[in-house]
Amino acid sequence: MTPTMAPRRRPIYLDCDTGIDDAVALSFLLATAGIRLVGVGTVNGCVNPAVAAANTLSLLATAGRDDIPVAVGAWEPVSGISRRGAAHMHGRNGIGDVLLPRPRRRPVDDSATELLIRLAHEYPGELEIIAVGPLTNLAEALCLDPELPRLVRRVTIMGGSAFAPGNAGKYAEGNIAADPTAAADVFAASWPVTLIPLDATAPHTFDETHRRALAASSGLTQQALAAMLGTCLTQCGKQSSTRRFALHNSLAAAFATGALEAERAPTLRVRVDMSAGPRHGQTHFAKVEGATAGVPAGQNPHEARVVLTLRRNSAALLLESILTLAPAPAFGVVPASRLAPALASAAASAPANARARARRQAEPAPAPV
Image 1 (spheres, rainbow, N blue to C red):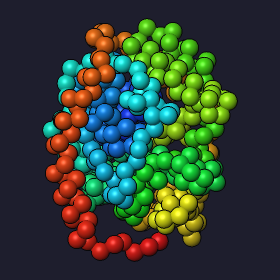
Image 2 (cartoon, rainbow, N blue to C red):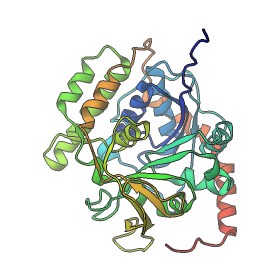
Image 3 (tube, rainbow, N blue to C red):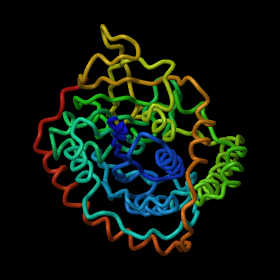
């Protein structure tokens, strides 16, 4: 009898800015069967990309996953206006000022854009991208390698808002508002895009019950997440009198893996507001003529499957999955000063970002939607 071959795990690249929600999303991906996290790139957002990479490496160490390459990405947005971070919610280090175990390794020499391009060529037609931060790295990669859309199987993005109020001002969502030009470039590329906006994510939250369940686990990853959530829930309580933490990035990861299903997900034409006014970074949507709800019309520029509602209680699913992560051997706790050396390691990302920016300046602007 011929032995049955195990199905090949789906290769996934995660692009993030590793704050607390990114940490939950990363932990979920590590716990998900059937996928293989082949790389993580960081971007300037919740924290700068070097600190985000240090956070990522430390979190991977808690799960015993030193096999996953982590690359430092873009420091400056394509739009030219740097985001100031989110210390008011995520703490100075992005993860609630929790001190994670010392990672055994440093980021790879490649920048995040270079890592993404290399993985796309290594897994042509298979690589899936999950982007849960500003889209600078993806836009830079598109500039450096115009063949990228042909090589990538699909892109899932946490960002934007259709009907829900913004979380970066009245109208805009934070990831898109952090680099609207990059977002417009990513939506303009001819690759299949699924957008998970605030409409789908805001109703799904972790609260004190979920934090206690994580804290009761014997796993270092779960205990770290519990400590992070403790900080974040306290801040949420101060700002809205409700100790609930919305699972924005985690839901994008869960949907991308197939763990969650959409209830409403029409194919819509997407435009990013580039004006200098209060709607800067807002996402605008229009129906695509002839498209069936939930079924993309094709790899047409500016079109995306936009998930407006999800079918099930995602918080319970995320918690259940993360609790299955096996404990890793404990490492020494990293002092805050340990983050400083990571800043110097980000210099390797500068050449690729500079080349992409130079190429972008030499190209004509894309036609408006």
